[in-house]
Image (cartoon, rainbow, N blue to C red; front, side):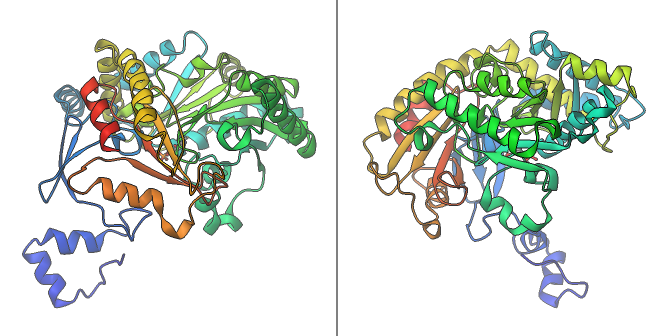
Length: 462
Ligand code: PLP
């Protein structure tokens, strides 16, 4: 850590003059990672699905960073689209101008939702998208009927992650990420159990399990007062907090039925699982339900630009149109023309190259080969996933499912080891799987354009 002091010591000044990047630029960065004690390599390049480090390693990016780089790195098509947009109009305040790239991207996003969504809203990060969704839900009820002014609460799930800003962090149930800020978090959000068959389904059939979870949600509505709840919020496939855990059949239909019973909205957070990652453009397509509001992020811009968004259904749009006519929200960089141009080109590449189909096919192979390679390992508790979004959970013993002590830092150690020779594989580490604090997993979420030999290499190397 450490910020450069105003009076920099002589050695630091020498570093500045000699452009000693290693010493200086590292010391000027507040922190590079939430895992400050781990030595991550310095990247000097990225081409296709490989990352290049300053000491000559070529690391296969098997997680696309944090499940972001869905078309790999260094695409000339995206470079050209970004450069063209920059020369046309590099920035305009989307609160009072519009631009073609923003409008075209929103049109593409709305079209991707098979008529279920009416409009899109584009921001810069998943956390911002979650904040916007929360405020949209609140504004919807206010403008629908002033008597619904009391709807200010949300019900989300334990072991979930929805972002890092105060509102979105409050929405998440990931204890380890919340703990330092707990006294600052908003108290109008409560958490019910996630759908997590590996640790939650106790000898029950899927039907019994779903009905128990639906009852828990119903009880929570009753406890907080159903007339106070704006929405139930969930990730269709839980990423960082659980390691690629999808729900059992019928779960989201049952949850939506509870929401409808109390006139509340269903918000699905597809920041990590959306835009093709699970083998369909939207993860909800596999659930037999459509959310009222949906957030998207990572694979929208594939890492080429910071960009995320919210898809909004027609009922909410019409209510706002009949009411104030505008969403009372805005960021300086929302609907950023260059970010939208990048996202638009990435989505076109995904469509033209049939990458969602490839994601499905390679995902099936990935599941099969990961099971073959790792099922018999005594410390592998569970392997689960959809599309190219796979999680491996580690335990002390298969039968007890006992997590490793937090101090062992198992997921981080595996991730760190992967970056070393001879492995050179980038995977995404996660903790808190068992109870929000204990429990380790890694996520494997490569680019959608990988081929059979890549999948074979990933499974073998892991
Ligand atoms: N929601 C989910 C499901 C996420 O996985 C994340 C980030 O990992 C976020 C929201 C927050 O997105 P961002 O880090 O872009 O703010």
